Image 1 (cartoon, rainbow, N blue to C red):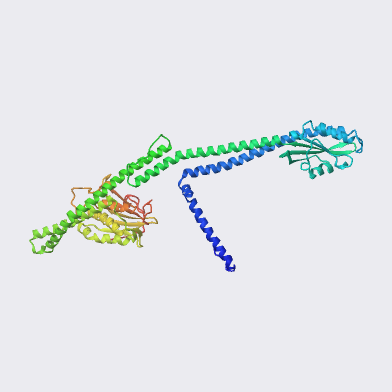
Image 2 (image 1 turned 90 degrees about the vertical axis):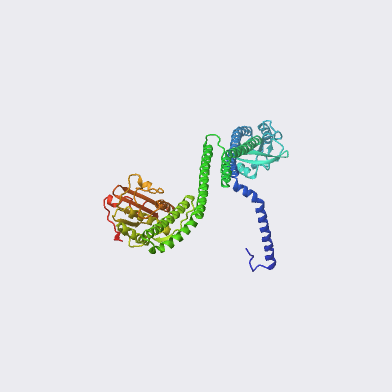
Length: 557
């Protein structure tokens, strides 16, 4: 903050210097306190012990203050009761002694006053720490002199306010005052009471030292303070020990976790006893063992994948490229060959295509196994993808006598997906449905809601037996191994499709019944990363359940 411009230059310079020194002092203080602050942030045990000490100190201090004050009050009340009882008897005695005199000018009255004071003092002089009795007559100061049982200055104890209350108002009054006696400050309980006589009233003052009560109160305060301090220290020690029992396993778990993250997979926590901390250590060790197995498995799979990829690339790609070049040359010249040789060239070309597809699928499967498959999601309209897949498989459908029916909304269906993978999934599903359709139509249905989008592919072919709806996604599995293939597939298409759906966070499910065909349903979240809860389309075909009217349009490709 800058100094105001209207201040004189010397003052502004002084303020700048002060501000600079203040900043330097603050930085130095921060450097000095940095270790303590760092230890405070890092040590749970320190924070728990410190907070316990602070809280217990406040509670014990408040309780000790209350006990000390209450004890002092009780001692004072007891002293007041005793003094009050003694004061009543002294007033009666003084009244009986002074009432024999009819007037204040009686020459024998002063002697009676002195004698009465001596008797009331009870042979307990103030020099020995006893009480003091003083008899005064402020209304008859010319006739009667004040008499005191001890030679001491009572002006600090018998104040003007007390004299006014007793002498003028005729009341019994009391107060606690402190005076110096024999070089020591002593607290006195001072009582004043009017003494009725035949000629009026005089004032009797009774001064009782509270030395015993003060000593007892100080002892109580000392005892409470020492007990409270010992209790606070004990609570701190107990809090430290209890916190240590909890913190040590947590620290051990943290160190073990750090070693595990550093690659030392054989590190484990020590398990002692059968309590909650032991259960925590055992669970941590079990988790570490599972992680170790998974990490070893992933490392082995990664090693196999890298080795497989390298072997395939070097051992298959190079000769396959050479064979492909020769096959392309032969295929382009097949018209000049004999019919049998020309047919062989066509078969060679087809098998090479199938071989390349198999190699591509194997590489894709290996990437899924190694966890290297990446999702390139973007907002995509699925309607054109469904149309494109249907159009590309129209030739195959025509050859086997199958029609493809599309039931898709007229409006765009937008979802955050990887269009290349979704098109591959749909191509596999529709291709399998055409191949197993037995000449009957294949329906492709697309629907969506606020959270999910679903595509079903329905055929009316040989169908699936009970339990086979889970086996169809296994690698190289075929419902009828003896059945001739039309598409030249690799047997990995549905496995790759299931992995693609799982990579999107979606579902790929199958339903089938012998002789009634099969239906596959692909369900994807509209927004990438969302969790699926339901699908917009049923898994069981609608022709197997009561018909449900739909607003979707159907067209035949």
